[in-house]
Image (tube, rainbow, N blue to C red; front, side, top):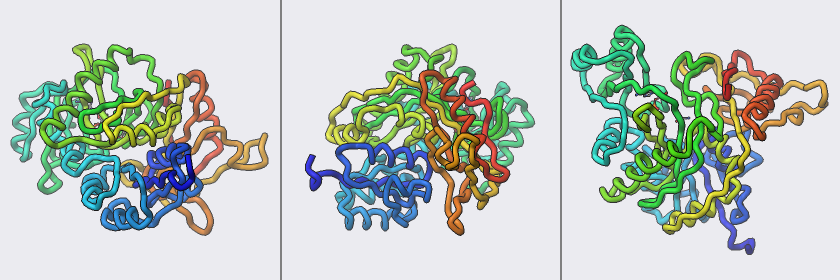
Length: 422
Ligand code: AMP
Ligand code: GLY
């Protein structure tokens, strides 16, 4: 391809997912240059960092116009919920992500549940309540365990899975301490959870391979729900039949239904799915790629993501080619994540005995999440600091590489789960 016709890509966001998307974009033969807004210092070698916050959607579209960006890919839900896609499209800029209205599939659990009901998509039964009293009355009629979900954007953190009545009561009280909060009380689903993400454009759905994400903060699925503490793919315990069921009963009906209802979805559509005894059930939808799912799925994608997105936007479904190897990632998080993460701690790569150069001794790919720079030192800047990712011919081998490498990275007070992939 001629240099002049190669593309400029803008990635919006600043976490590990955006690091992975930017790296994938950079690897595309169609791409001349990658920009990341705002990105983080850990990804400065992957693309040019643009000092515009992911929530400043006006400034982002002005930048894209000025730089003649050919395609923008949106990472986080915060930009989507502010209408970054609407803003870009009004300015005739090409962008991959859902409109503000379609992004409600993630930003409002109530909206998502209503669509699931309408399109007959299997999910947990639920009731939406608007006051503590209504909530408590309904709770008394329900079986335990039960799930309490706050409406609105909580990045996976507004969900309490409650194993006693008192716990559920407390979760309701906490939820209604927040003004104007709406709350869903939901049936508890038992089974094996997995994440399935598709590239969607209107009525076209291209499912990616599936991943397993670890949501709880601590080993043995203890502690609070987080954005995700580690993940892996391939997921051998989930059969092809179950995956196909998730595509046919969850992803496709949602995309087709939204398209028919004139709220067409375009972008990464993420379904959190529970494989239960009665079949697949939807736990949640997200209107974006998962994080850390992006960090472990994109290294397995051998074909060109940018090509597939561009074709999909024209209505063409392309073949995705996947590496058969296993990829596993572990997230290193700041002390007290997710509640009150302690940040601004130096990230230190210690020298291994075999190598004199610190970072070179690390075999895993590092995807930077919440990091910054101070006095020329790399420091933690967010709840999740980085994801270490390795690829190997088995989960065990990938896991060994990551956990060995984690011994060589320290950040005061930080922690990571020791049971990813076990
Ligand atoms: P969400 O933000 O809705 O994905 O919820 C976060 C996590 O809570 C999920 O990944 C599940 O592990 C758990 N969870 C949510 N809803 C349910 C449910 N109805 N039954 C069991 N676990 C759930
Ligand atoms: N890892 C789950 C999410 O991105 O929501």
